[in-house]
Length: 479
Image (cartoon, rainbow, N blue to C red; front, side, top):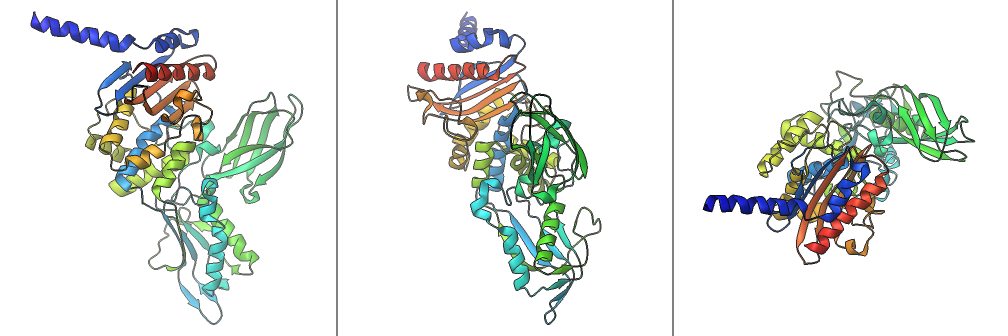
């Protein structure tokens, strides 16, 4: 009888936990959720105990909330003070009298994911100009050699195998290289006309990125549905889809096919403009298969911001490139190979050391861009609990999450005054996928952790987001 009583109590507790949120019931009953799957978990942030769940062990596509897994592992394993170094030097011998270098100028990539990034303009300034000045100060006036960028820190598969073809040519699908630059992104500018007219390509920024891209775009509607189709390291591709009508300057952002080679070309052009003749053509370590440098005379070094600042941009702005860089860096440091696969192995080991069961995690990349990724809300919630209670760098991790209604990807989300200074979370979105995970405080003063992942809804995403906000709001008021 006693055993039966305990079983009955357990069932009642489970039923209470599964049905206490009326807003979730309302969201689930909406017609747009008829074919959807939901994984939802709320934990007490003080002791990790379950507060509420709905299919919390159902693994779903997480989109960018996967970045929480990558950023937490990177912070804990690499440390918030880690910086990346890009080194500029030369090989061979330099005749001090004539200024003639019998050797190459080498730019050695150190895995910096934000070299020349739009997000760190003040930090880097005119770094290529600084390099040019330092080369000239070294007394180099003529180069019997080439400009070679050493991109060998990571493997030469910049884009994870599980990414969609339509993503890899666009800015958000830029791959991670041992030497990345300018967010590995360039701009394609168009002038558009009336409905179903053909947009005119007006300029490429920077112009040096101009490739053989066939323009198959049409002007239609008011939404950006334009895609650049180009593989890494390619010299050609095409642009298809539609972009908004009647725009004097509409910009598509595309991924640079070969950032290391682009940077070599930029420095080669700068040297030429300064009157320094370079005999050979710009190249990269990838292209020079037998390339190796035994001795490098260093003339300049460029140091990145600390990892904590980089991860703040990663989670605030949801930058896929940074996440993919960090996965490869983890692979290099902990598996001896700078690849996505090695980095994922390091992440799984981190989760194991943290005591987080990862049997519901299927990780294909670091950013969440691959639709082959899968994770459940319980794993993410437990990871957030680990970072809060046992993480060495929780303050850095917590501050990397956008504040509701104010910052990054949450700037237009969770605007209710109830969320103000009360909720920080990472968002995720892709076609038919919405997810959120983070921390908030209930009206009772209890600190809570939440994760919700929704796949395969129909109808407008704003309606689903509003439903999620109602679910969180009700939890704040009830707990």
